[in-house]
Length: 54
Image 1 (cartoon, one colour):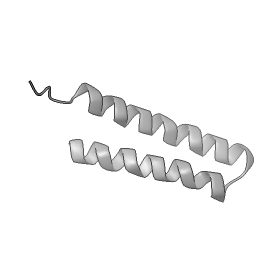
Image 2 (tube, rainbow, N blue to C red; image 1 turned 90 degrees about the vertical axis):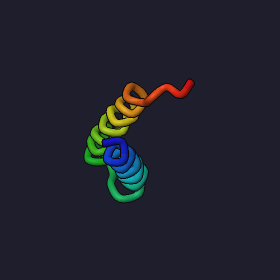
Image 3 (cartoon, rainbow, N blue to C red; image 1 turned 90 degrees about the horizontal axis):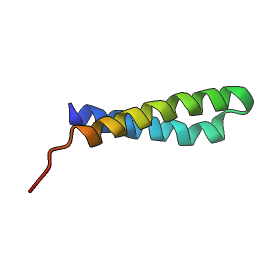
Image 4 (cartoon, helix red, strand yellow; image 1 turned 45 degrees about the vertical axis):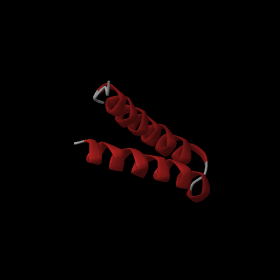
């Protein structure tokens, strides 16, 4: 599960970065917002589900 979350996080970040170069205007903004939400969601899930090492 964590490997999938890391993969989703990295893919969302890569798409978010590349949209700046590939698209303009509203399309770029919508894709950036969507991938940003996905990246935040997977990042938050990774933080919440991490195991504490004592």
